[in-house]
Image 1 (spheres, helix red, strand yellow):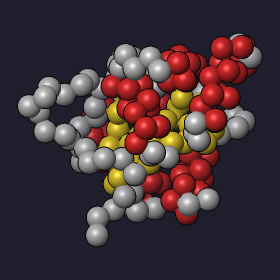
Image 2 (image 1 turned 180 degrees about the vertical axis):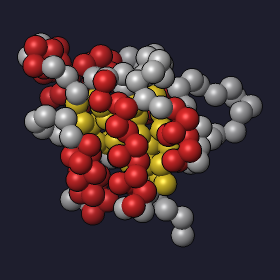
Image 3 (image 1 turned 30 degrees about the vertical axis):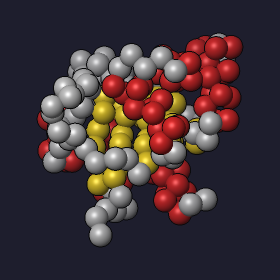
Image 4 (image 1 turned 60 degrees about the vertical axis):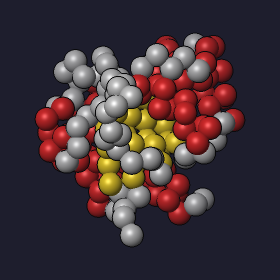
Length: 165
């Protein structure tokens, strides 16, 4: 029996350079991992080569062509970390203009559990659109981490998903 497959969606935030910690923790917990990054996140927010070495898979950011094989198996769970203001709002509104956001939007219909660990500053977190987006996504079953961003929170919430709680 193969390991469950985890998609890690990485957004453009300074903290993204620590995504290796999440990958290592997920792999230690028995997950196979593939990373999908927003186009902006690929612009130097994390070490793509190091992530590819850790996962043994390419980092995805662009759609594949119809004749290109799927590089990842279907997701058993998704963690979006860091989840930025822009991504959370686009996701809640169903604006699937990048592979990363389209993947998050499709997760609802596919009934794939999703964990979101926001990295949003205080001022943006108070914006009514963001508050509405978080409520909407929670209503769709997304597990949102509360408080200050910590990679460990993603791992803790992912363990709850795996345990079925």
